[in-house]
Image 1: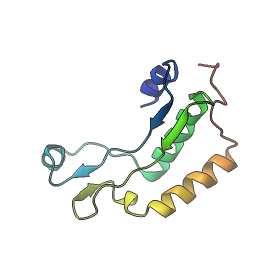
Image 2: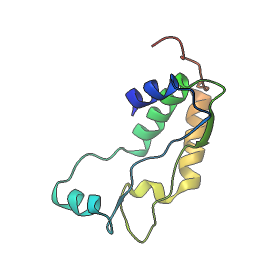
Image 3: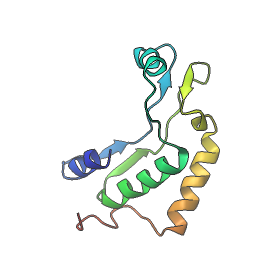
Length: 109
């Protein structure tokens, strides 16, 4: 995801949407996941990654979304995404405590 953000940061875009992968029981990925468990980001890992991504995105790029909602009735993983308010509060706290802001590291990678 970080490499994709580095690539996207160089494109002439006006906006971007960021959110985690949702594994749903009514999608092919859900069946695959249940048969071949693969690692899913924890909330902490996701928040840290979003912080890294924000640092390398241009300050004038509009961030339309930082998290997403998988339909709760079909969500297999990540279960922590069910509490969107907590995720956004934890993300906000992390960004503030780590002094992270959009474009902070734009020219350092």
